[in-house]
Amino acid sequence: MANQIKGKISQIIGPVIDVVFTDVEAIPSIYDALEITKGNGEKVVLEVEQHIGEDTVRCIAMDATDGLQRGQEVIGYGNPITMPIGDAVNGRLFNVVGDAIDGLQNISKEGGLPIHRPAPKFDQLSTSAEVLFTGIKVIDLIEPYAKEVRLDCSVVPV
Image 1: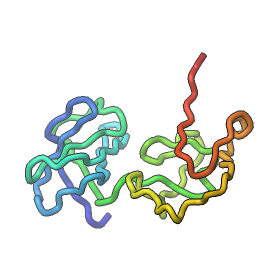
Image 2 (image 1 turned 90 degrees about the vertical axis):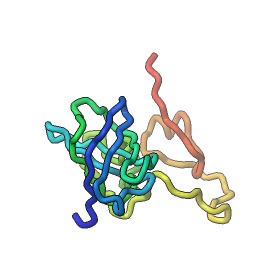
Image 3 (image 1 turned 180 degrees about the horizontal axis):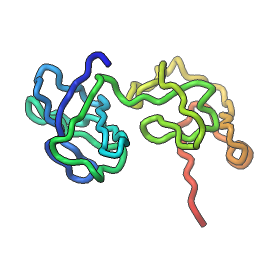
């Protein structure tokens, strides 16, 4: 892909990873996504949270960091983590980086929205009370949610 930014892991402390880049001019921006490929082919996505010095960024791993080591290559494309949007996401389960985890096919992230973006303007919001249909029958029946309300659906085992 074009605009690849390459760096190397310099430090790993739990989910916090420091990455050093040789090209100081091409250092990734805050909230950009970086990608590491583990030895088994699994990809770990990092999100840049802080610039440390001229050539180092501090990142948070969005998955387990087991198997990563110092000196391992990190690739960035200059894009933030995005989530797919549209009718195709209704009733689906996604992880924090927008990959489907429900066993069905992945949805294209083309045209998706970044996870860090400004809130909509007040005049763009609706003042009517509309019900949000999640596509999950149990949730829609037992606990319907209003549209344009931030929600978190957690399942607590009994």
